[in-house]
Image (tube, rainbow, N blue to C red):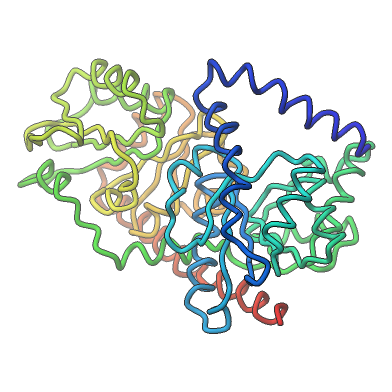
Amino acid sequence: MYFLYNIFVTTVGFLLKPIALFNKKISFFLNGRKETFQKLQSINKMNRVIWIHVASLGEFEQGRPIIEAIKKDEKFNNHKIVLTFFSPSGYEIRKDYPLADVVCYLPLDTKSNVKKFINLVHPEMAIFIKYEFWPNLLNELQKQKIPTIVVSAIFRENQLFFKSNFIGKFMRNSLRSIHHFFVQNTASKNLLKSLNFTNVTVCSDTRFDRVYKIVNQNNNVDKIERFLADFKGSVLVAGSTWEKDEELLVNYINNLSKENEKFIIAPHLMDVKKLHSLKNKLSKKVNFYSDETIDKNAQVLIVDTIGILSKIYSYATTTYVGGGFGVGIHNILEPATFGILVIIGPNYQKFQEAKDLVEKGGCFVVHNQKEFNSVLKKLEDDTLRVQAGKINGNYVKDNLGGTDCVVDYVKDTMV
C-alpha cells in the first residue's frame, strides 16, 4: 500500500505544477514549499526543538495557546519552536508569527522530503493539531522514536480509519505512530477504543483558552467606533462570510432591514473584485473599512482587511459566522466568548462546540433565506438575544483548561 501511496503523492506533486500557473492558491502552495528546507537551516543540531504542525488558520488558533504556554514555561527556555502549515490560507497570514523560531510549509509527504525534514528539525516532540495524518511522516517519526501527540482531535465514524477496506487498514497503521491522543469528546475516545487505542485523554479544545483571553485584551477599533458613533440600535457582525452567506445578508439588508440596524460584514476572502461586487449588490449606504472617511450614517461596513475580526465581534449584538453553506463553519467561539448569540448555516456537524451550542440554545441554525429572516425577526426580543448570549459566554468559561491538560503531558514526557 505504501508503494501505491507514494506513487499517488508524487503524481499529485507533479500535476500541481501546471495548475499553479492558473491558480494563485496552488502557486503559493508550491512556491512556499521551495523555501522550507532553506528556512530550516537556521536550526542546528545542538538546538532542542518542539515541532507543532497545523493544517491552516483554524488549527493555528488551536495550537497558539500551546505555543504561548510553552514559551512562558521555564522548563522550555532552551527550546526552539518550529511551526509548520499545510495550507497557504494559514501560512500567508501567520508566517511572521513571533513566538515561533521558524514558520514554514510542511513539505509534500514523500519519503525523501520527510527524511530531510525530520533530520533538519530533529524534534524532541511532534505535536499535530486536530487533523493531518500523513503516513510517510508518521512512519518516519515512529522509526526515529520521536514522541508524537495529536491535540484537540475529533474522530467520526465516516473517517477512513474506521473503514474495513484496505485503505482503512493503511490509515489505521498510521495512527499507531501516535503516542497520545487528546480528543474533544467521549465519542472520539470510544471510536479510538474500538481500534484498541487506549492512549487517549478527553480534554477541552485549546481554542477555549485562546478565545477567553480575547475578552480581556484591548478590543477598541477606531474605525468601528466611528461607524457606530451615536448609534443606539442593533449591530449584526457577519464574520468569515462566503458567497452564499452574503446572499442571505444582502437580501435581508436590501428588503427588510430597519434604520435601527447596522451591519458589519467581514468576508473570508480578501478578493478586490468580490468585495466591490458585494458592495454593488447592496442598496443601502456602504463604507469599506479601508475608506479614509467612515460615515456614521452608513448602514453597512465591509471589512476589507484581515486580523481584526475577533475585536470587531465585541461590538455586536448578534453575530453570523460564515461557511455553513460550504465545507463547514468558521470559528464560532470568537463571538461566543463575548457572550453574544451566533447564527450559522447548516453544515456544522464536524464542530463539537457548534453542536453543543445549538443544543443549548446559544447558536441558531438557518437553512435558507426564510429561516434567516425569521431568526432576525425573533431576535428583536432583547431578552431572548441576551439569554442566548449568556449561554455562549458561560459555555466558553466552562470549557477552559485544555491547554494545561496538553502542556502538563508535554512537560512530563520530555526530559
